[in-house]
Amino acid sequence: METSTSNRNNALRKRRKSVRPGEKMVLWVSRVFIWCVIIVTLIPLWFVVIAALNPTNSYFSTSFWPTNVSFANFHKLFTETTFLTGLRVSAMVSVCVAIGQVLLTATGAFAFSKLRFWGRKYGLMTLLIIQMFPNFLAIAAIYAALSKLGLVDQIWAYIIVLLGGSAYQMWLMKGYFDSIPKELDEAALIDGASSWQRFWKIILPLSVPMLTVIIFFQLISSFDEYILAGTILQSPEKANLGVVMYGLISDNQGQEWGVFAAAALLTATPLAIVFGLLQKWISTGLTAGATKG
Amino acid sequence: MSLQFASKRKKTLKKPKAKTQWSAYGYLAPAIVTISLLSIAPIIYTIYIAFTNFNANHFLDYQFVGFDNFIKLFTPGSPLASVFLPTLLWTFLYAILATFINYGAGLFLAVVLNNKGMKESAIYRTLLIIPWAVPGLISMLIWKGLLNTSFGQINGLLHSLFGMDPIPWLDSPMWAHVSILLVSLWAGFPYMMSVCLGALQSVPTEQYEAASIDGATWFQKFRSITMASVWKISLPLLIPTFAFNFNNFNAVYLLTGGDPARTDNQFAGSTDILASAAYKMTLQFNRYDWAAAISIFLFALVAILSLINMKFTRAFEEVD
Image 1: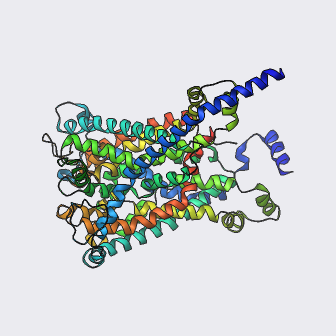
Image 2: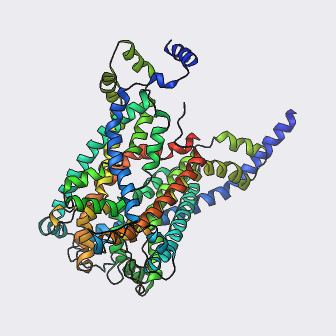
Image 3: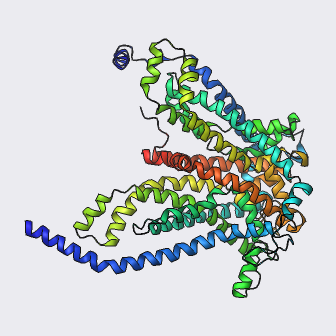
């Protein structure tokens, strides 16, 4: 018995030794492959940086390094385009939607997580199923209804339409509320706290990380919105960032490529950094459903 | 203590209704009201419009037309069907190809990055996730500029590296389809890669050790340990990804605008998917009736896919 295991170990050691050079080869081939993929993936973004810094606005620039670096495109972006207006509209909309969304979802999630009522078991699932239909699919109905009510081109109407999709955030938040230890909550219950006191004084303060994550999610997704903004907001001074940037690249046969690149750089960088900080939450949120089953 | 009490009560009363806390409905009200008004009502109104002839010609005097719009969708030769059927085909093709290409690329990169000897793989992972971090709207518009046939830097690069003639990336129907798939790959593989990498890293190392002791080859280990666990975690994500791509408005509309135009009809270009065709019908042509009928079709499809996925993953089931 003992000899057989030692034999096996010897054999294993031998094999490991013989495999080593091969493994090293695989490792280096993998590295070179990954480097190539990284270069191919990031070159387009590097081109945007070059274009933003290149004042001549020559579209067909083949250099890998910016020549004659200047901020002329940024200057033009701020003085000659509606970029700042779009930024203001998007910022206002996203802050309103984020705050509204958190208020709507926190109360709903509290009910689903901590209270007992008829419909608790299937209620959230029903809401999630309903919200699997992206609201832009009802674009004809939304546009027809708004134009009948005379609400087309109203920013607040746009904000309200965006407030509609809250079930997924509610599900995320309910999961977080569920993870708050029962003892904290029950102690308050025994002390005779009302449900509002439990919600406001215990659950919400403990959920600040999740609330922050949901607010940032919402900020990013409102900045990323084109289809409803393009439908509802029609006058140029109410165009949000997405509509403004679409105009920069589509109008004038793309003559404004350098200016567009500057706008893309300025908006994508902070949003990408926020996304990077939220990465942990995003991946757990997305796979939470999968690992459960 | 309270648990005991609760279970006792359950036995004696049996009716869970007795436990209802009415204040719960107060907490739910804001979310329920907004969802009903802003999600359910538009869906119902869409269904209603789909059964009328509500469009620019009949804005005030529209009538109920029954299943007319739906029949037209599937009647070859009708103007609506000549938009719908080719667009439907491309929508399916796009969603299937984009999902599987992205998944394949993400999985392959995850396996390569999961090499234990690659100490610096966290850096590579961070760099490769960047396309996912760029907001979709901005990255699609960036690609629209980069792929411009005469001025775009991609053609410039290909010319200076290989002396290639300009490729009509967005201007010829064939290349426009290829471009949409390539750009979707660029934007979509990081998500799949992260999911697969997470799955790979969750495999306990003891399993590999046990397999090596039993004399399993590299490929056997890869197939029965690595892939088994990766499948388990990533497969349930394929259906939602498919549903997402099926309605991936941004990837099509922002990149090509549905163009190049088709000669046989004005309503949809050759790269339009159903979602962008419905958008154009609403905004450019005010054909609310047709757009609504297409939307209903998309609703039904998303519903079927979601039901399949729920059965499959039991993701949103309440665990008591």
